[in-house]
Length: 220
Image (cartoon, rainbow, N blue to C red):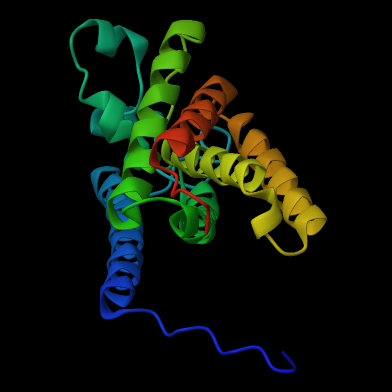
């Protein structure tokens, strides 16, 4: 045929699903920002010295009080920290990185996931909780926050979908290069105080596994 037919417009149900997925991403980002503001409030509206927290945020003691991952606290029964630490950023620098990556990776994952308004936030929080468990076992002496690890979980899911649906993506080498650069940036954050890369690795692996469970048949 000399002319290809135009693609059918999305159904009202599909449009509603996309709107719900976008709203869930904004709600997740709003929660991350709110917890950062709460941390500053609990810290007396002050930023800890950069020698203590180079991410320009609250003191480690304040972040601990709000739910940072702590192996002794987990062993004492404070399991709520697995979820609470997922929403904590160490400071403004890693918060901005997390917000940017969560929005872009969340949209990318949402293209291939079933019920993205539900599964994308669950991958973020559940992946971060998995990273906290790994970190608690392999790096028990360090307290850590997990918001960047939530972004790492979305990165893991996005990378898995990229492999599973390789032919569905345009500019495949460029997409792979961007994913590798993002992974390197997340690993770099994991080297800074109040973060650790066991947390990041555990979250990314959880994201890969989640992609196998919630992926839409046939891809995006």
